Length: 498
Image (tube, rainbow, N blue to C red; front, side, top):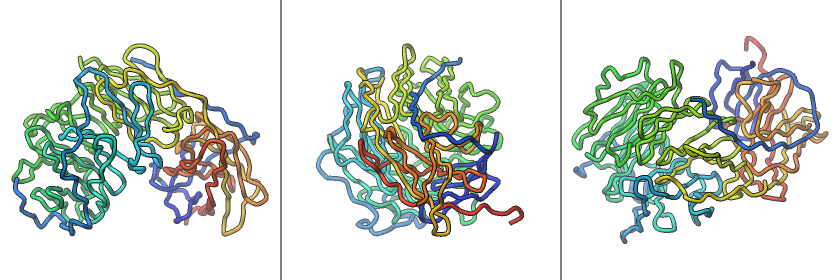
C-alpha cells in the first residue's frame, strides 16, 4: 500500500508532485506519489454501488461582530411563510439532495424535481425549529417557502471572519451560526443579538457545529469542548465520564423534535440531555477503532454514523448493525424505520431495513449527476422511488502543462475519487468508473462515453502519480456534449531534503 500525500496549489487547477507527511483531503488540489502501472486503452466501466450488511434580549455584545444589516443579510419576507408539510413519525415523506452546480433536488412519490431557483452551492440541509427546510450555501443561507427558495442571508462574510460553517434555526426563526472561531446570533434582520461569542486570540480551539434544544438552550461544539448558552451567558458543559479520551469534536446534531442533542467526536457519539443536564455515551458498535465524522438522526430516534468506510446504525429500538458500502460513503441519512440513503462516488444507494437496495449509478438520473454534498430524508422517506434510467454520457477533455509547456505522452486516469491511499497500482484502481488514456503531443487528453458524474484525474509524471483532490472536473458536463476542463498544471517533484 502506498500513501499519496496532498499539498495546496496555485489558482489554476494544478497537480502537484510534492511529498508531505499528511494524508488528509484538502479543499483544492493535491499531489501524491505512487507505484508504476501498465498502460491500457481508454475504457469506461460503470459499476453500481452495492451494500453488504455484516452485523432574550436584543442587546449587542462586543464579542459579536456587527456589520451593516444591508451588507450582512437580507431580511426574510414579512408575509407568512409557506410551511413545509412535515410527515408524522413513521409516515412517508420526501427526500432532498444538494447537488453541486445544479441546486436542491426533491424526490417524492416517484418524481425527481430540481427546485427552480434553488441555491447551486448547497452544502448543508436541515429542518429548523420553525419547521422549514433550510439550506446553507458557501456564504449564504436559504429557506424553502412553498415551492421556491428565499435567500435569508445573502452573505455571511460580513458577519464572520471565515464564512458560514454551521447554523441552527429556533422556533421563532432566529438564526445562530458558527464560523471558525466565533458564534453569532441573527435576529430581527441583523446580527449582533445577545449571545455572540468569540474564541480568545491564539486559542487552539475552533468551532465545529451548533444546535439548540426545545428548552431554548443553544449548544456550540468546539474542538475539545461543548458550550451551552442559557439565554444569559455561555458556559462549558461538564461531559463527565462520558468525555472521550483526547476528544476531537466534529459536529453537534439535534435529536428528534429538538428534545436532545448528539455530540460527535472521532472516538464516540455522546447524547446530551436538554440543557446539558446529563451526558451519556451512545453504543454505536464501532469497536475499539472508531473515527466518527458524521451523524444522522431520524424522527423516530434512529441513528446512523459514518466511521471511515463503515456505517454504524442504532435503530429506534436500540438494535445495532453495521452495513458496509462497497464504494464507501461520503454522507449518509437515516429515515424513520432505519432506511439508509448513502452518497458515494458511484452514485446514490437506498438501503431499506429489510428488502433489496435501490441503486442510482452516477448518470442514471440526470438531476443528481455530479457531486452530491448532502441528503435529508423526512419521515420514512418517499413511498415510491424513481427507477434508474440509462446512464447518460458525455465527453471530457483537458490539457496538461508544466512550466507553460504541453506535457505529451503521460498516462492519465479518470475516476470519481482518485484515492489518497493506494491499495492498487494506481489511484483509480477499484473505482466505480475508471478511464485510462494518454495525453497527446499537444498535452491534451480526452475521454468519450463518460457517464455523467463527479470526476477527478490522476496523471503519472516523473515516475509518480499526481491527482486532483476535492475538486470536480466534470460538474458542467452535459449529455452528448464535450466539456473542456481546461488547463491542469503539473508541478515538479520536490527533491529529497528540500
